[in-house]
Image (cartoon, rainbow, N blue to C red; front, side, top):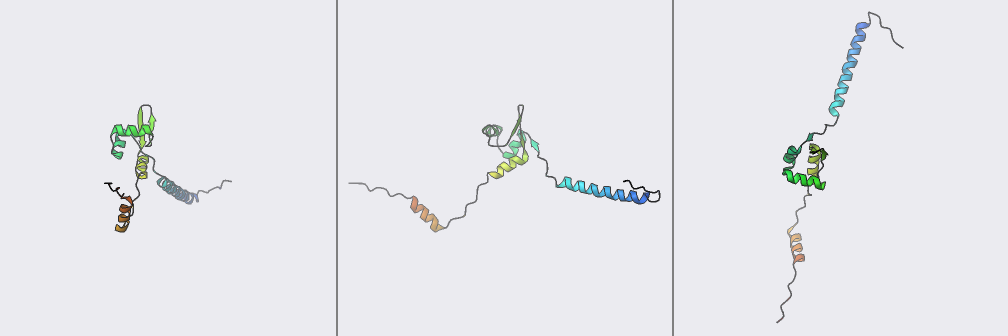
Length: 119
């Protein structure tokens, strides 16, 4: 079902097509910008900088399977985002400050009475 366009209607049809193409272009660029950023692949030197650890330490952590890594041939690779996520997952919970009464009770509970010497 093709609609035949006369010569007089041609400029109007071209302007409509131009508007549709620009709308589609805007939609595609919006979808591309909302797409999650691609992971950044890094090598050992950058991993040392991110983790602030020496190479032997990182090799030991990789061998133990502690940090996320990828091996291709003889080279180790890491994703920057995964290393940062690994660091953040090790965050310790902040403990609430205890009152002086609670601290005194804990100290008393840990004190052992020494046996009296027998004479």
